[in-house]
Image 1: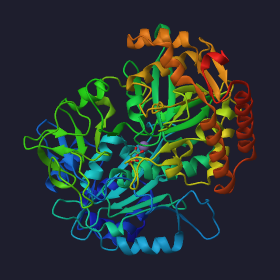
Image 2: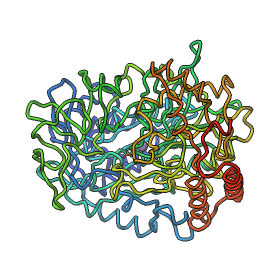
Image 3: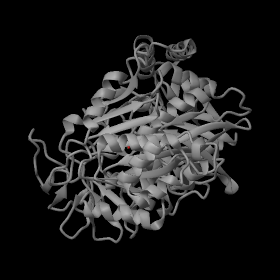
Image 4: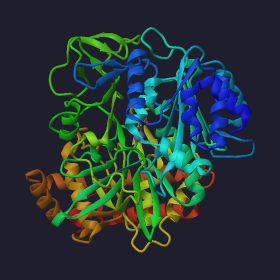
Length: 626
Ligand code: SPV
Ligand code: MN
C-alpha cells in the first residue's frame, strides 16, 4: 500500500479495520477509500468482512441509530423513508457525461465536470461526527464469469444492513482477486436526518453515475432504489460494461417453470416497477431464481442468466394469502426482514395496502402518526401504507427458491418475457415470430402506465423499452442493437413473448384474474419445447382455445369459457396500429441512433395489421385466424 494512503487509513480507521483492509492487496481500492474518507470525513469507520459478528454489528447499529426499529416478530424491523423520498428520483439521477458524449434525449445526463464539482461540495464533511460502513459484495454468484466485485461506503446502517440481505458477500473475493479486481464503487450518504431519522436535505438529493470511474454517488436520500448501490446504481455501470463486452444487464426476473415429466425450463422476464414482476417470479408451483436484475451471457451457443442478487426488495402492496402464498408465509415467519414504509400498529405488527383483514384505525407510517381518513396537504386521503412500501428479505427464506440460485454458470434461458401495464392493446400472452420480431415489437416497443415506484404522476402511458429505460447508460438505439446482436451465433435462441396482466374490457374491468398468469407461463413452457401449436396473428402467435382450456383445468382447476378467451385474445387492430405509430414516432424523433431494422420490422407489423383489418374488420376474434 502506498505509504501516505496507508498512514491516512490507519489513522482514520484504527488498527482493527486497517488490518482488515490490508488483507486486500489492491492499491486502487485503498486510494478510493482514502479519498472519500478524507472528503466525507466520518468520525469512525467500520469495515465489514462478512463474518457473522460483523454482520450482526451492522444490524445492531441500524437499531441503535434508530434507522430501524424492532417489530413484534423476531428478526423483523421497520424503516421509514421521508414522505417525499418514497421512490426513485429520476430527475436528480443522471449519468455523468464528458463534453462531446451524447446519450440521447431519453436518458437523464449531467455534465461530468460540473456534476462532480456539485457532488464533491455536497459530500464535503457530510459524514462529520458519524460512522461510515465499508462493505464488500459480489454481483452475481461467486467464482463465476458473471460476478463483479463491488465496494460500498455508506453512513446509513440501514443501507449496509439491507445490502447484507440482498447481495452475496464479497470480502473474500476482494482478498482473492487482489489487484486484479475490476470492481464497482458506491459512495452514499444520507446526510442530515430529522427526528424521525429520515433525510432532511432532500433538495440536495443526487444520484450521479460516473461511468469513467465506475463510481456511483448517492446523497441525501434513503429510499432503496436511490441508495442501495448494488441495485439500480450498479445496474447502470453493468449495462455500460456489458455493452463493451457483449453481454446484457436486464431489469429481469429469472424463474423456473415446471413442465411435464419434471422438466424445468428457465425464463427471464422484464416488467416495469409495480407491474407484477415479483408476483410472477413468485408464481405458485414454480421456482424463483431472482425477481429484479439479471445478467445474460452467451455460453456454448446458449443464453445463460444469473440473478445479480440473492435477496428481494419486494413490493408489499397487494400481497395477500390467496394470491401470494409463499410471500405471505415468509412474511409471517420469524427471520430477518426489513419492512419499509408500511403501517406499524401499537402492538408492533404491520399493515399494507391490500393485506388480508381490516385496515387498522391508526398507527405510524411514512407520514408519521396515521389514522383512517388522514389527509395530505392537497386534501387527498393518505392510504395506510405507501403504494411503493417494500420488504427486504433473503431469497433463502422462501420455500419456492430454485436450488440453482448460486450456480456459477447460471441457468439456460428458454424464454424471455416482456410485459407492462397496458389496458387496451396487447393480448394476455403472445409469442413473437422470431428473435428480431420479439426484441423489436415486444421489448423495444414496451409501454406501461406509470406507477408509484418513481416520483411523479401515476397512470400515464410511458415508453419503457425492455422496462430498462430508467437504467440505461448507453444510447437507446445502441442498447436495442446490442439486444438484436445478442442472438448471433445461437443455435436455438430463447423464444420471446409478451404478456399483459392488465388488459381491460369495454367497461373498464380487468379481463383476467391475477392467478391466470400461471396458465400463460405453462403455455409458454410448452411452446419452448414445441409441445403445442399456436395461432398466427398479425402481431405474433397466440394460444389455441383448447390448450388453454386444458391448462386452466389442470393448473387452476377452473373452467375457461370460450367467451373469456374470445374477449381476452381478440386482436384489437385500431389500438395495435396506434401503438405501432406511437412507437415509430418515438424512435424517429426521440432516439438519435435507431437501428434501421427496427423501423422496417414495425412497418411490416403495420402492414400485417392493415391487411387483417381489410379482411376481418377492427376487432378480430382469435377463431377467425385459427
Ligand atoms: C424498481 O423500482 O424497479 C425496483 C425497486 O425494483 S428500486 O430499487 O426502487 O428500483
Ligand atoms: Mn426493479
